[in-house]
Image (cartoon, rainbow, N blue to C red; front, side):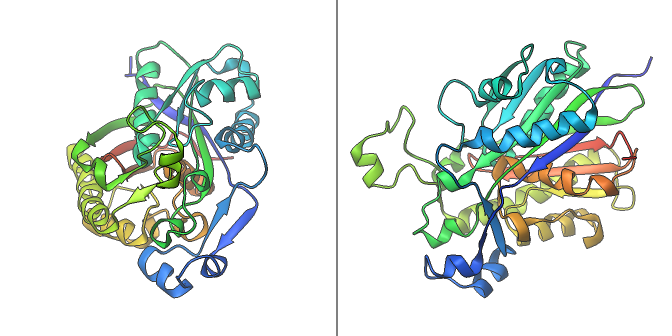
Amino acid sequence: MSKIHAAITAVNGYVPDYVLTNQELETMVDTNDEWIVTRTGIKERRILKGEGKATSDLAVPAVKGLLEKRGISADEIELIIFCTSTPDMLFPATANILADKIGAKKAWGYDLQAACSGFLFGLTTAAQFIESGKHKKVLVVGADKMSSVVNYEDRNTCILFGDGCGCVLLEPDEEDNGIIDAVLKTDGSGGPYLNIKGGGSLNPASHQTVEAGLHYAYQEGRTVFKFAVTNMAEVAVEVMERNHLTSENVDWLVPHQANKRIIDATAERAGLSEDKVMVNIHKYGNTTSGTIPLCLWEWENQLKKGDNLILAAFGGGFTWGAVYLKWAYTKA
C-alpha cells in the first residue's frame, strides 16, 4: 500500500475590491511610483474597507468558493487551521469565528501565527493530520488584513502590505501526490527587526502604547531584506537537494510575495527561469499569510497533476521555510 500523502484537492482566494495604488500613496506619504516599483515590484494592493470588517470577512468568500468548487458542504470539514498575523481578536480564534460563519459545525480549529511563513507552517501541520489518518478533510486558510496594523504615515511599511485570503483543502492521496517534504526554520533573535510590539502581554494596550505607535507593524528594512534574500533562497535549494530535484524537474516556484528582488534572488539561486515563478506582488503587495495560496489560486488553471512545486517563504520572528509538493489534479 502506498504511503498516504496530504494533497491539495481544491484552492480558492479572495481579495477586496478597493485598489490602493502607488499614485494614491503619493498623496499620503513622501514617496512615488517609481521608487516603490524599483525597490519592491509593487504597483497596487487591495484594502478591505467598511465598518466592522475583519480578517474572517476575507476568509468567508474564499472558503465558500472553495467548498463550491470541490462540491462539498462545510459540515464535511473536520479541522480548520487559520494562519494569520491579524486575527479578528486575541480570542476566540479566528478559525472558530470562520467555522461559525460558514456553518462548519463538525470542525475544530485554531489559529497559527508565524508571520509571512504562517501558511507553510500551517500546511505542514495540517499534513500530519491527513498522513496519520486522523482526518480526511482539513482546511488551511492564509489570510491577513494588514491594513489594520499599517501606519499610513510610515512610508517604509505602508507601501508594502495589502489585504487578502487564500485557502486550500487537504485530503488523503495514495498516488504519491501531495506534500512530500518540508524544511521549516525559526530564529527568535530576528524579532527586534520585524514585529508588532503592542497588544500582547509585554505591552498591553494603553494610551501610551497607542500614542507611541506600538500597535503598528515595524520593520527594519535593510536587516530584514538581507536575511530574507539569503535564507529564503537557501531553504528552497535545500528542499530541492534533499529530494534530488533540479531546475529541470521543478515546474513551479511559489514564493512568498514580500519583495520582487527577494523573489528574483530565490529563483536565481534555484536555477529557475522567470516563466516558472509565480508572481503577483505587483497587484496585491504583501498579504502576509495570504500570498502563497493566492498564487496557487491564480495559477490553478496552469497546474497539472504531477507538477513539482517548491513553496518558499520568509517572515517576522524570524520564520522561514520551504515545502516540496506534487500537485494532485488537473483542473477540468
